[in-house]
Image 1 (cartoon, rainbow, N blue to C red):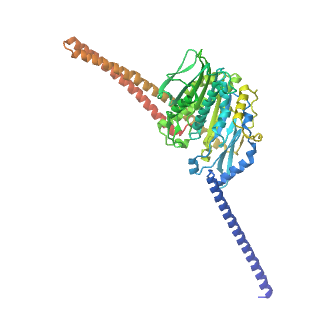
Image 2 (image 1 turned 120 degrees about the horizontal axis):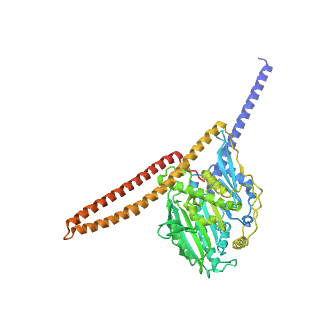
Image 3 (image 1 turned 120 degrees about the vertical axis):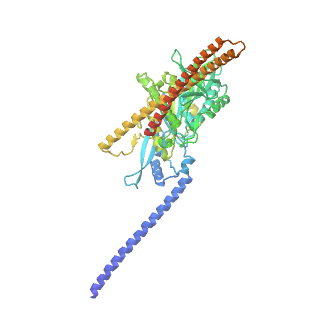
Length: 583
């Protein structure tokens, strides 16, 4: 082989070796970079866990990056407090709980007043790439996890206290709504304590902004009851069952409900504490102490001389709603509770929306759709009615779907979209006083004003016409089943009440009367000197009594058979539906 060819081959080998060495070096660099990224990811994961925000670090980084780019868009709550409104919708986000930390649930909700964003964790079609699906809503007030109950009270409930104490007959209502375990009851109990302080301070005349009612001319009474399973139970009177009646003037009266007079804040809180302890709660998969009833605290101000209503404040802690996965092991009683809860929440939404519709001439308010709205009739139909809803949400990513349901429910009540301009309205003296009182209590941190945000920033995947048709058909069938289930559950409540009333008032009471008559008959025939006529009369009357008892037993059996058939139908529909939709 010639020296030229040999040198050429060596040159090619050197070139190949150099490329291989270069590829090996690049491979080592990639491995080193991947190892560094892995270590950095593990460190970030540990830091997030120590900071109380565990979970998938990739999604956590995406959320943190989004918040860093949008943080300056938050506004001050004081700007929103200037507007006069009949309906005020607030959202409160609670901190991450210990249970969510244990199951590595990251924070997926951002509250940048007045907007609330839900960052749903998604995977692209490749099954590897991660991204966030952002959904945004705009409300009157949005409180993040750092806001205290005092902050929530200052902008949601304090404006109503002045209106109630003005002596003009204002009916104010504060609702707390949210998923079970979202801090709803915690928020309402805190508001109850703050209401007691503010209310009695105004009535005592010690507040510089006090006007209207005072202890010299006004009495304060408290009624506290719950609606559970279609029944009204007095929480301050050993859970005594009450009835809803309507008088000749069309006013709704809760018959048997006790009202207790409160002379100071301490006595007021003692009554509420007693009621809170006797409220119905049950353990569910989502919460060990889930509220299964609507608790209603009514604070009534009346004129001492005439007894005329000067003002009324209703604090309503609604029953906790749950997702379908949280109700998969529920029995018939839990499913019945869920059906009643959803029915009343739907009726409540329509009634609150009707308050705004009244401005446009629509006078119809569907308050008869549930017992909850029927009891609060005057709060919906009165021209002086004012309403505040506080929607509480859980921050965990696993609760994102239910958080969206809660926010959609609140959004439908007000029907206010992100980017809409605030309703124009004049400032009221009450609002101005409330703002001054809030400033004197504590100064809020001013934040830059945000620009208008898009209503939603998520991408929808186009579906084929056939798939849409199938989904629409499935949705129609599901809606029909849900509607049928609601009718069955409502009928179940009515049959249950009729069965109990018949058993108590007819069967037991009449049977007791018949037993008393039988005793007298036996005494008559067992006495000395009883004649044959007495025995004949005894035998004839005993035959009539036995016939009556047989007829009562047959009637009770018929009602029981109908009730059992309805229960079986409810169970079959529940299996088919799975769970009622959340409103």
